Image (cartoon, rainbow, N blue to C red):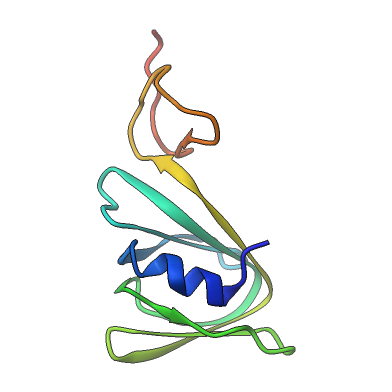
Length: 118
């Protein structure tokens, strides 16, 4: 399982981050070097109680969460915080376009991409 300290190291090479989805309860932040084509980092927050976070930010420095579910990080000269029951970090290539059969093991297509019929 990836820790937030390890995530900070990976985030140095995947500088663009944004809030992909928030349904009022669950929040998904994705990060990559070029969000136009793919993302490599997913941070899912579950049972979110509070969000103090920009929708787009760069090269975050994450802190380990507190026992009370406070997930804090610094980016673009600002301090941000998300209060949630838990978080899940997933690393791996997720393409923002249909690659057909060209996926390598562990790669996937983002769920919002419309796949071709062929």
